[in-house]
Image (cartoon, rainbow, N blue to C red; front, side, top):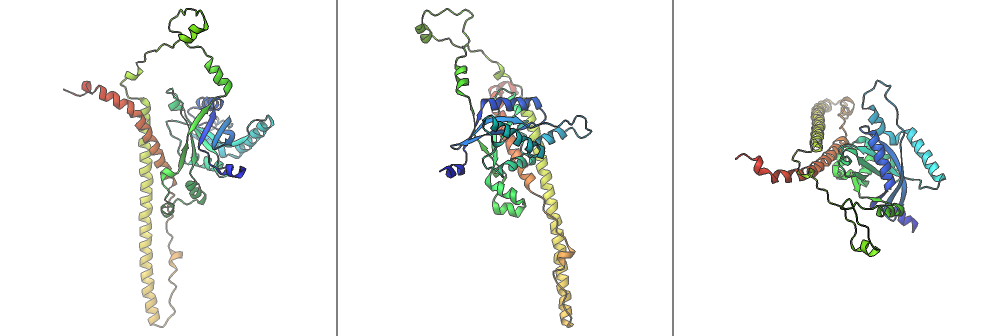
Length: 360
């Protein structure tokens, strides 16, 4: 029975409120540098419970003359670094000593405007998921959360992509055989924030704001139950603002960059196809010439020359990996969904005031 429960895949991720606060604080303090850390918990009845988290140690690169993006690159690769693996094992050992959930269930990372789908993200998740299938990557979008709504998502690699990544072949033939597309790279898992009973009872005991500055004292408990204190409704005029959201502009810029990267990858693949066609044409000409020579040698009763020497004389170009193109296409889809979400409210406002915008 226990073995059958272990084989059941989890359907959702339950994150404790304390873990959410730790992740948000770490990612916000490290912004715009990428922040990464480890999460621990347990799997229970198809729900992956995340009960604790701790950040990976950062490396100070302020005294070096390297590129400014080195800090983000080192932080993005931190989950699979040898020093951080040893640090993670040491932290888990200390958690076991104090009788806390000490099962590694994945890692977390920060993102900016949904820009997290890259090769480093896939390598980190593969590093965890190849040893334990019940691990996830929590992604906290600092930019989206700054608008007032928490952006915390959980992802894992699909089984088909895990098999293809383990094989290491992302050629056109292998992708056609496996029918693997950019939509099959990541699987998003629903995230549920969980509060302890003590915190829930504390939240219910917080008194509400009164309607008027002077609140008449109730004569009995029946007065409180019959006429509870109500929270006043504060009007907000932010919804009437017609200016274009700056996050929409930034997302559109990132979307254009991803489309340009897609065209670059497409041009590289077309260049490979032209090189392959030229080499195959040379091989065909050489084989035809060698067959004619062998026919003449056979007519002259001489030993024919081997016809497989082209493998030594010609070298076919190696097809570039299509993995970067797949991840870039998945990132374009992510940006497109964000643009669709941003433009919903703006389009409604523009239609509401189109009478004033259109010339008469």
